[in-house]
Image (cartoon, rainbow, N blue to C red; front, side):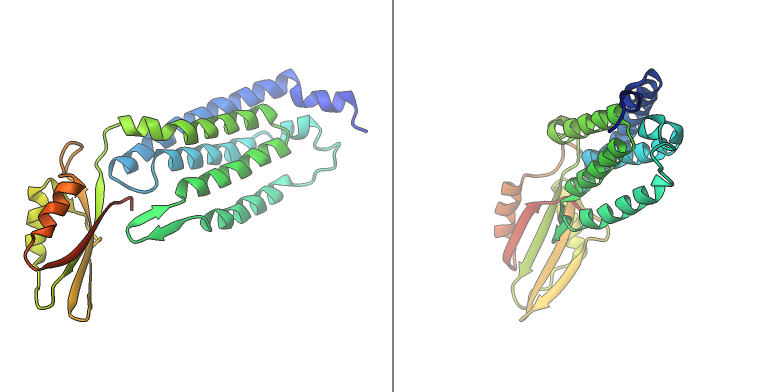
Length: 247
């Protein structure tokens, strides 16, 4: 039966002060992760502010918790017979990484599930903090993570960003488009074709071109509906598909 002294060690003044310091580090890591993530989000990448914020914050939690082994388990690690919890932590982090990778899906130029994967990994870190007895830090990490996933999409919507469009063009048999012509037409409509996104294929004489068009600025870029109207009148066009992309 655990004694009151053993249980109270988890909420002693020194433990609370250590947890407070950890929370300050987590908050700083969160802000820096959000800053880096905004750069990616601004350029239309799939991994944005939420993903970077969660991963940066959880990584900081694992790093800083390793610096306070004397405060693990309420400062009673030796009494509990704990040999080396870092081995367990390494195994958990590695295993959860594979689990998170399983929820990441790619369809064409769109990638989904990155934030879910990051939140799964962050949840594992929350469990680790609880396991070693840093309860207040675990509560703070859970709170920060929930706020990111609930409100960050709304915040990102107000921040300036360059949107991207995934475009699939299928041309009539015998029609051979020119890449420089497509690039020029994209520029005229406020977009540039993203480097490394061109894919060209041919089926039964129909050439199919796929690429991502990235807006030149936060205010440029024709709408999907207006681009669809123009493509419908484009010479040699058989069919097309437009969708918002995060790659």
